[in-house]
Image (cartoon, rainbow, N blue to C red):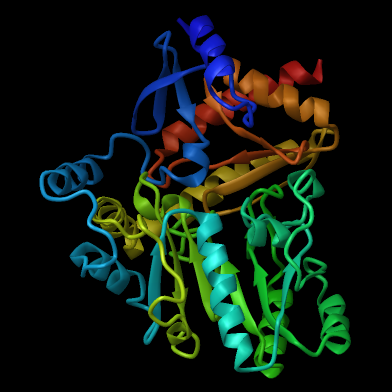
Length: 397
């Protein structure tokens, strides 16, 4: 069966993905199963999409209930679930408003368009992103993305973008002096695709201060690290950092496609009727699923448990820093990474974990990214550590 599936995939599906050599057929909680009924601990979670694991009963019930009513109606009409979801998302952000779309790259494009519209009235046009950033695959988001490998073959990209060095505030100060028409900075407080690179607190504090002082919008890309992944609803809440625009996706739809921007009162209304839109964004089905997800994670007790489990996981992973193959171990909440010195060792680590029943992400050649469900059990973390210990021993030989 798997051989036929591989052959048909090559024959009928455009080959823009390097896929794992297995077919996942179903999942329950933290576990998924392949077509041979082999069981895996899922520490990829659809790349931080399935924040409550697989087959979550409340999400499933909310989807089923909505399916019996309406799947899609378009944004020509008032959508009750969309309004409810927006209200829930901004419950701790007075005056903020939400625009819904379908993905992270769409959310970032919407943020750029909103920023540019604001910039017209402030005589500003340059958007700044940082080294190491990943913001998406569409042209604007791709331009703001740092690694050249994603851009090869797609030039020319979008004009009006500049880069500054991640965690280097002096570089940004020099950029402000050089370009007087900077309108916005976009930054991931935690760079997921780069290998869980965490912004320095003082850096973000100074970046925030400089942006406010120079009338520059601050955009926080929370696509991967948002929705409770760090132990707070948004990762920027760990910092003295007040974004004007927040971008969301991945876990936002509870497993269904959903993205969003949350905009502050000073900028939200610059997107006027007809200035931006989406056919499928904020559809009733995705909103029902997302509402169920948010109602489960956005509780102090739940978020505190993410912090507790994340600390336990990170403290145990730090043992690997004594290993000569490992350069660093880092994380916040339940987004963690093991960075190797050697890309061959990192690749072997990933493949051996797969073989032993643990799904992990190899990113930027050297990094193993770990994204367990937020409701992962401590015993499941211990199980994953046993597998990783075995793998470390094998690649050490």
